[in-house]
Image (cartoon, rainbow, N blue to C red; front, side):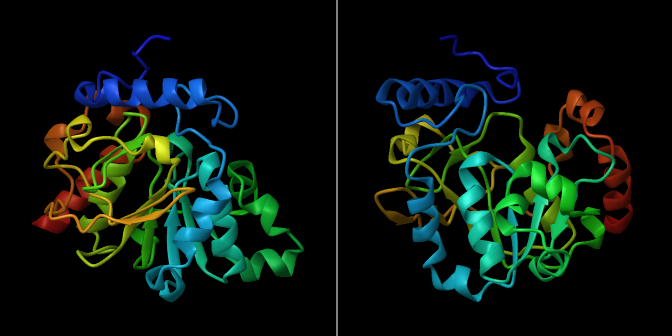
Length: 255
């Protein structure tokens, strides 16, 4: 298997860790479906979701943001059954709007089952399009990961979407230093700290749930205060339709 993915040029330092995780999941037979070049689904994703949902921070959260990938379907489903207002980004942020609002009360009123709404196809069909600037303050954030460390380091596919959205959230006051950032992964995705170095623009994880354990990272990494626009690549501006206008709006807010 090649270590290169379509996103490897955006974060080359973390590419070897991603490749090793994808290969390991396949070799050990704990992947569910395709693995390479994506946030991999895994055996035990439902157990990991249950572990995360037992956190007091999860129980207290009324508004949850969750990534749209398959391994987090059980967590999105728990959010809906727990009555939480759920926000999920459009995959790859390729629409003219970045997010979808999934309200369990509205779904129930329409007779839409939560199992359908928790899938990416379901929330694209039944979610309400919404812009970053119209979102409420978030109580709990879930991000998709390929490799993580016990110190809170993470890498996704390498596209940079998660760190970009977290930066935007901070610029707009939708999250603050106390907002938990969490993920669910297979235990084989937990790697040594040197494999995934936390960079200045990275948002570190507070919690990692696997099929075996719940890890509280107690990260000491200072979370970025906003978007480091110098690190946003030209192809991201080209691929994400609303990004240039959002940058202009955020810079106007900064004064």
